[in-house]
Image (cartoon, rainbow, N blue to C red; front, side, top):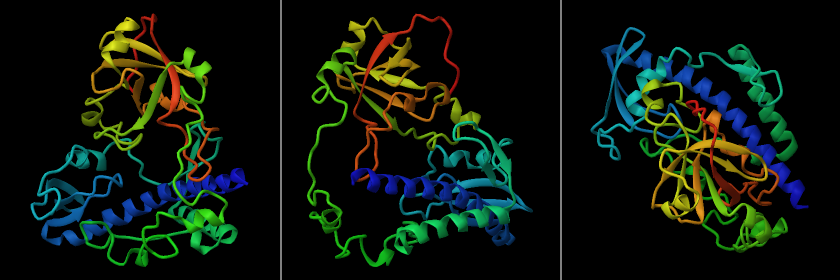
Length: 328
């Protein structure tokens, strides 16, 4: 029962993620056209949503069909005119030579990086067909569209007229989960792979791995083609406690190999006291140091479909290979 429900959830998540990518392209095209059409006076105030995270209100100067300058908007109640790291590079992101300029459709297997260019009409049709498939299989309630954000005052005002619960309120006791056969109240269960649930495995792989933390200069795997952002952190780092590092003969800046039951990757060591001696931490989104190789996608939470990004077991070895790490 759990497996079927989880597969349904994962299918929906993957489908919506694909739709989001297509929607971003359509949004980017429409937003750019909208900004330029409004900029008759040469200046326009917009909300940056280039990467779906850095929603900063900014003032854009336009000449013809080109963005000339970007500054923070002092009237923005949150940023008060200060742009974050990514927003300061919006112009370079907007005009990056290798930016995505048109819709692409995958033609190979996932991970093969095989794509073909398609028209905007085909992209819209593909998205519409996917949405109709989800609607037909799971019902219209499986799809939610909304707009607005805290800068426009629309994010919470009237948003779904409440939360996605039967009462439209925050519910500690979930009747929805109960009807689906799950615990209606939060219950702690030990991770599938931990020193407690797998003590024998922990003897060989003694560290708890935290993976998937975000970096302020990137959005997931995006923005790494922008040199000014890339140079801020070109290589992945393994954060390790000084006590644990000393036992392994590892110094700050050493190349290390991080291994789990699934595979191994190389990274630079960052010795820091901010992390527990029993734990190590990797960032994500680096092609040449991909932490997803280490995690187990088969062991997932039956309700949310989430995998153990913060609870996998691993070991760390000082790498004897002299070859350095490539950027990213």
